[in-house]
Image 1 (cartoon, rainbow, N blue to C red):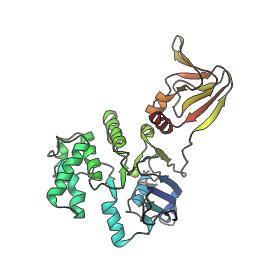
Image 2 (image 1 turned 180 degrees about the horizontal axis):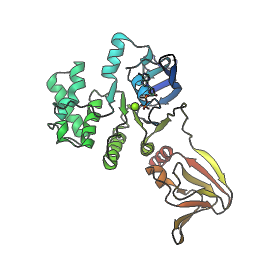
Image 3 (image 1 turned 180 degrees about the vertical axis):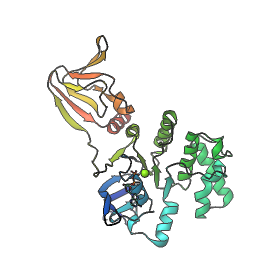
Image 4 (image 1 turned 60 degrees about the vertical axis):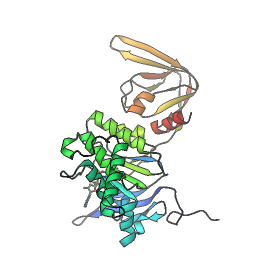
Length: 327
Ligand SMILES: Nc1ncnc2c1ncn2[C@@H]1O[C@H](COP(=O)(O)OP(=O)(O)O)[C@@H](O)[C@H]1O
Ligand SMILES: [Mg+2]
């Protein structure tokens, strides 16, 4: 038996983006917004698309959702060749395989939460209206709004409206859920709750792609795709680093990136106070440090220094989290 190839029936390995290019033609100029972007996400993975405004996040999501044709390259979702689809196949893909959570919640003000959530089902005409509303109630319950199903959007907080929008994206049980900057309009507490919700919704055989300019979402991701105005830098995975005795590994207040696992040597962790330094810990082989800032997106809360020559593994927070969850 041959191995199924992306785009062939039976191929079920999630989302494959291959050499995607999108150019917008202006008045006598061409802007290349996506420049040969490639990544892969297995079913169950949560992908965070990280980049500043203008880096092409919405453009990529529109291509993934089958709403925009790329200039070149291919997108496959399981056995669907999205970029080659047209007509009824494309319509079917949009209605049954993809769920959207739009930037700004885009809820219909005159409809209740359950009616808003039921809209994609009613539009796709796959079930009766009463069945659609019953499914909407179920999914609202799953996102923690079981007691708000009859409320109108204006009677809900921003965070609750975002949950309704997430429920609406999920109601058709899509293989791909796309969310465009879902935390942009929320305060810190509400944003945390929505981030937590995306993590809960993971691990159900579906790919979730969330765009953001907010590095706080990095720790929840299984995979980070970095978008920059100049192109896309791949996320650097785990790698070994060496520090000489006395070297500073990171300084308190530095932006936090990696979590470090010590392979050999000793590391001293100190907090720098106004009136001197406070020794917090000396760590050795097998121990890790730097996880707090890296996982939560805060600056380093202490300084780490190699006391002797040190070899450590620098891990992106999402890889560290997977390691801890497996342990
Ligand atoms: N329809 C369009 N026509 C021309 N340029 C566009 C169009 N849509 C987006 N762009 C440009 O493409 C770039 C990326 O936009 P966008 O995908 O919205 O980025 P992001 O969502 O990361 O802010 C921007 O410079 C934007 O001005
Ligand atoms: Mg955008």
